[in-house]
Image: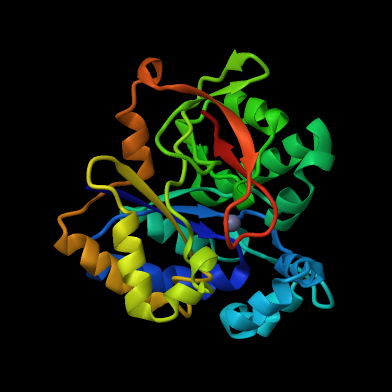
Length: 298
Ligand SMILES: [Zn+2]
């Protein structure tokens, strides 16, 4: 069983606190992972305000105890308190992460802006977000980024084409079944897409049938498939904070089952683009998540 852990880092606090904790667990377990870091300002307070406006989300906020999960400073970031930088606030953490053998790549610039407004940003806005993100990455890592993971699994034709021009080794923007090439407006893009194949913990932890940690662990072990690549997205803000023990238990259980942990860039370098299926990128909804996500079409 092949497992790629895709760690999304969305916030200042997630990078400051969640990322080092995850790194310690991964190193203790001798397991590798790929990290995708939001390069710009932390406007997560705006996202949390936005979800408060969504019907039914208030219930989820209480159920998942969002204040203790995100912390008050994060909830207010970009609202009544100024937005703090994310990657640029901790360049050494990211350089050390890479030096320790983990993959570090780009998870957009302004995560909240991208996730909430991708379709109204227009070509200029999208290119500005990508340029700012890649510039920030270069200033921190002293090399060009080789991969991109879309904030909130949201993308569109403009973003897919703009990223394709950048000559990355791969993208991970969607939910899906297995690596593929994207068909956009009748054209097949060059950059392979490696989709996330499992639901995220925050999507399932409020479920009535998964109330305790043992049930959650059983649920995830059932999701991993023995005969294919499993791409599991985790969050510095979730698995790296309140859910660290659940994450460590999952890693331990996967190791017992003989899982082989791989970096996403290693997966990408083993792909032969000519052999990958060609699929459109569609929009879908997943249980436990508000709004749409981009997904691998049939
Ligand atoms: Zn994210």
